[in-house]
Amino acid sequence: MTLDEFDQTHPHPDQVSVKDLYRFMSVDSAALDHLEDLFLKCKLYHSACSEFNDPFEGKPNWIIDNPKEIRAHLKRIAKKKGMNKKMAEDQASTVMKNPHLKEHGKILMQEALREHRICCFTTTKKNLLLWSHYANSHKGICIEFDPKTSPIHFAQKVDYKNKYPEIKYPSFGDKRAMEPLLVKSKVWGY
Image 1 (tube, helix red, strand yellow):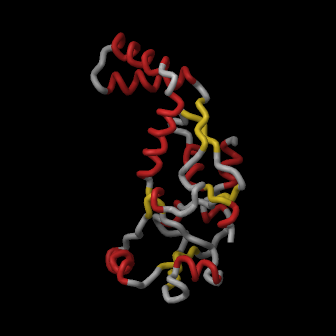
Image 2 (cartoon, rainbow, N blue to C red):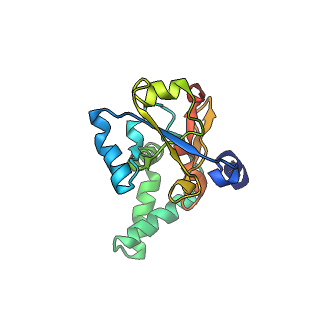
Image 3 (cartoon, helix red, strand yellow):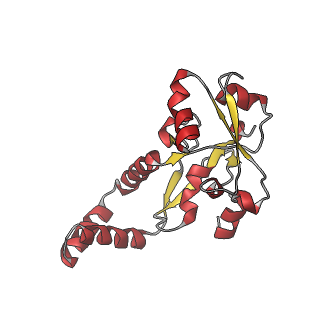
């Protein structure tokens, strides 16, 4: 996916003229802390990716794309840890010769993604399934947010696909590395 394609698939609200965003919430005892944070402290709860029930979210297929870039990245990490140039090169070579590099890299990246936290919104307040699933079977609330305000204006549109996203590893500094956090299975498209 090119950067232009990424921007078209995952636009911010102001790029697609979204007037309002909504968040469904339960009002049961488990959610009271989140509601208090929202209404009294202006803090939004962000769920960890590991808490999501969609197996697509935050779980891409990793593709090792550029071994030279991985080697350079490993050397930079080693140097930051105080290793001299020769030691850093030796460590990078050892890691690169490891036949389990791909699996190890996938595990490390998966662990990193699990640490990311996400706050989900929708553009509709009238969807019965959203009321059922996220507002405690219609006993909860739906809160309206202005997508022009910070930090809501940083929201990005989710893409619904039939297959897991593929992400090139490494993808240092590339906003397309965010894609695993912006893809859900098509079955959740409602």
